[in-house]
Amino acid sequence: MLEQSTLFRKHFDTDDPDKINEILEEEFRKVQTGPVQEWVKMTLPFYAPDPSLPSIPTPEEIEESRSGEYTRSDKAWFLGIGGSHVYRVKGVYAVKFSASNSLMQEAENLLFLQDYKVRTPKIYAAFSHQGADPLGLTIGASGMEPKDRSQLPTFHYLVMEYLDGITLDEKMWKNIEPKARVKIYEKLAEQLRLLRSIPPPGQSYYGRVHYQGYDPVCNMVRYRMNSLVGPFDTYEAFLQQVYNTLEINLIRRLIFRPEIYPDMHLFTSIFHDCFDKTSKGGEPKLSHMDLKLDNMMLVPSASNSSSDRIEDYDFYLIDWEMMCWLPAWAEIAGGSVRLPQDGHHNLVMWEMSKGIKPFPYAEANFYRECAHALGGSLCNQQNGAPQLGVPSNSGTLTVFVRL
Image (cartoon, rainbow, N blue to C red; front, side, top):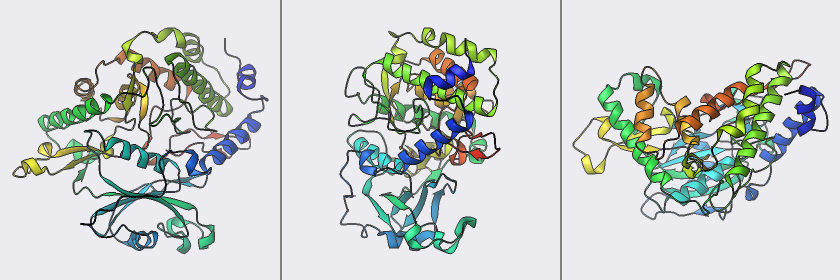
């Protein structure tokens, strides 16, 4: 039986909601601004220039590109940590930058994948720099007070191949014929199959590449978001971390609305009984964990250049910062929430199942129900921020995570 004060004291040395709120906020702020070298094992800075291309852009050249063409931009800022932004620079480079250390994890993930058959953009450089102003903060852009360059955050930069294609979105998807949608989903399923065929470093390994812990904002296991999480060498240890994270999510919810409902009692009491520790659904599979339309690109195919139908284009998944080994059911839980469900939900699941073997739908649905009842989200949220803020008793809103 859940009891609020007992639950609070289980994870903190206090049952004061305001104090817990302050602890969570401060812990998250510290870990997000920690040294990037603690987040990755790749050697930084990284440079792999192609002599046939223009020189790799400098921070100053990237700053000069801010008034030109950009491909993606998330202008949400939380706790001083920026969203990610992508500019096209020198015509051939897509330069993604952010004040979040997570971007260097994406660089490391992309480098790892370049040894496999999963379609990804080529990476030419990854580095950090303080002093350049790619967002125009020194001139008060985005409605912010102008900053001196010495006050600017350290931005991390990822220089990639520019993919000259189409990024999907909801509006475009609604105008795509059903048969073409099926072909696009088949291409997604094939990329997922290739991704999930990459073996983990251990039979029961749950974590990031090169035996590293998860990003502190990885929704499923983030707990208090005060450190990198894991890695874990058993399914049981992983599930315990998932459960502890759900309890922390519930605490955040109770700070805002101090009422415990029957479904909260139900899911906390049956959680461990509903995951078969011997099921293939618990096997670690390399997962993208941010499946949504605007992370899917269709690029004209060199092998089928005569076709102008987008369903014949090459399919790319982009935005790889959350890639990690998770149980087989995890990608299903996330994809079932984020992929289009406008009358085609069963189509989505059917096509995904062609690339995800086994397809442990029951475990995915159960976890989704737990997340819904106890608070939290399954995957990255649209426009950069899941709604996990909880007001303190003073009425001020604290936002705990930027994804």
